[in-house]
Structure formats: structure tokens, C-alpha cells
Image 1 (cartoon, one colour):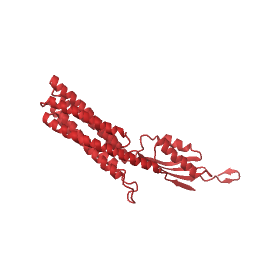
Image 2 (tube, helix red, strand yellow):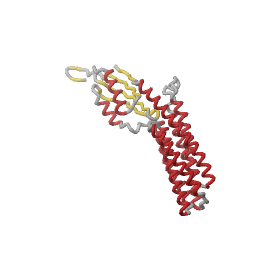
Image 3 (cartoon, helix red, strand yellow):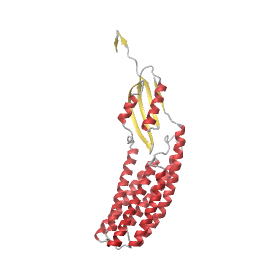
Image 4 (cartoon, helix red, strand yellow):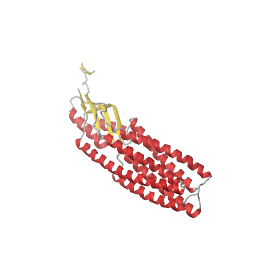
Length: 308
């Protein structure tokens, strides 16, 4: 005898929709701020001759594209499942994050190439203009980070956007320091040096994004789930004899799934065991989508007083 369960809670989906709406509002505000100061930094970098400002503008350009992809993917993720896509379009967010990470890396390498060339032959830089633009960029990045931080770090794309904006803020700090060094000490090499530091920030974010996105696409076990602890918890449920064919994966950021075959003792209440298992997965391991197949173990055959 066996039983299957696909437990869902309707109120969780309503809450998820509210969270997604909040994410989209934050992403739209951050996108508007980012695009505005992307133009300011690009123009300021061109007029001042600062590679650090242009590098930060490049970073902000990838952020703007990433935010746009995130908004598009969030809209796709809300579409209802279809016979051809039983999970809907949830993976669109992960694909957007992956594309964002690859683009970040490409921009970083291009800026690094130019910065290395300038270290050997520093270009003149208009320090006062560079300082003013960098300070304005810092204020803008901190404002965008505050907006994104209010919705937390539930999804890969919101987390990606927050990481990028914070990276831009650090880049603006570096540009301010480089401008001060140029104005007070005449260190023209500070500009390409800071540009290289910004490139390193971009690469760290890019590698993290690509790694996390690929892990989701490869259906790796979510980082917060200890499989050994999960197995032990399932086996500790009254009536459970053993568990096998256990799989845990991530459908999209913040939405995890589990499937398993569970052997239960003869006479155990399958529905009661299913209820306990689904609550265990959600409450202790934050796994919202669970599929358990429960099977009664065959009783031992007694022949001549010997268990066979």
C-alpha cells in the first residue's frame, strides 16, 4: 500500500505574490536611480578623463541591464503553469541572474585591460569634477541600496541587485579617494589603480552570481539544507522505518522542492505520517514543495515460528 502527497498551503502563495510585488517595486526604484547616475558618471568620466568613473559607470550599466532582466523575469515567474511548463516560468529569474553575472565578467575584463595600460602611462584627470561626480554617485548608490535592503535578500535577483549597488558604492568611495589623491598629491596613477580595484569587485560579484545560478540550474542541494540532518529527521518520525530516493533541489530563488520514498511500519496511519513529514520539511528545512511516496513495509512471514 502506498500514498502520495503534494502538500501546498494557499496562504503561502498569496504571501509569495505580495513579496514578489514588493521586490518589483524596489527593483523599479533602484533601476531609475541607477540609470540616472549611470548617465551622470559616464558623462563625468568622459569630461574628466577618469577611468575609475567610467569603470563605475560600466558597472552601473550592467546593474541597469540586470535590474531590467530581473523585472522581466519576475513578471514571467508569475505566469500560471501550463501543460508544457508544469512549474511555470520560475527558472526565468535564475537565467536572468546567470546572464547578468556573465555580462558583469565581460565588462570587468574590458575595463581591466584599459586600466593596466594607463598604469604605465597615466592620463591627466580633472580632479574637482571627478570628486563631485563620485560623491554624487555614492549618494545615489546608497539610496538604491536602502530601497533594496528593505525587501531583504529573498531572491537571487534582489540579492544580485543589492550586491551590485553596494559594489558600486564601494567603487564610488574608491573614486573619491582617487580624486583626493590626484588633487592633493598629484598621483595620476591612482585613477587606473582604483579602476582595477573596482574590476575586482565586479569579478567577485560575477563569480558568485554565476556559481549560484548554475547550482540552481544543475539542481544542486540548497546550501541551507543538511541532507544528513534531513534524513535523520525523517527517520525519527513515528511510524517511519526508512527513507530512500531522497532528492532536494531549488526551482528558483527561495522556492525549494523535495521528493522521497518513505517506508512506514504496517498499520501506520499514512495520512498522519504525511502531515508530519510535510510540516517537518516546511518548518525545519524551509522546503515548500514536497512530494512523499509512502509505502507500508511488507509484514514478515512466520513459518514454524521463524521469521522469513
